[in-house]
Amino acid sequence: MNKSELVEAVAKKTEMTKAASQEAIEAIIECISKALKKGDEVRLVGFGTFSVAKRAASTGRNPRTGEAIKIPASKQPKFKAGKELKDTVNNR
Image 1 (cartoon, rainbow, N blue to C red):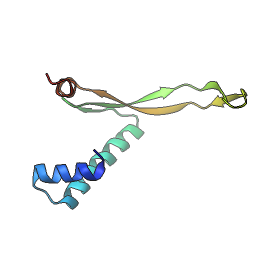
Image 2 (image 1 turned 60 degrees about the vertical axis):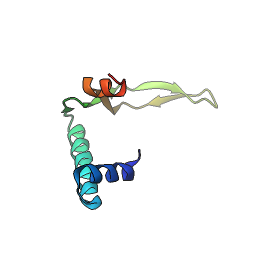
Image 3 (image 1 turned 90 degrees about the vertical axis):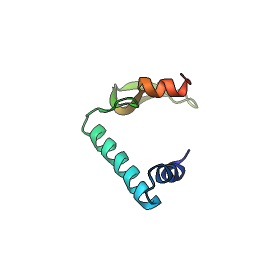
């Protein structure tokens, strides 16, 4: 399912217009992104938790030349599925 299909599904489920559904979905994504950028965690009970993991700087290798390269430290978004989502996916 891509974003436009999600917008259509939400519009159908909630009886909202597609434009309103798209606006709501974009607002949710924006709010989650801003919270993660601040370093906050976003918990949606039953669905899952969005968080930020810190990756330390490391040294890697260029596969073509074998030359050592420095990989800078970074932050990675993470998602941990909640119990209800896991159960739904596993047909429990």
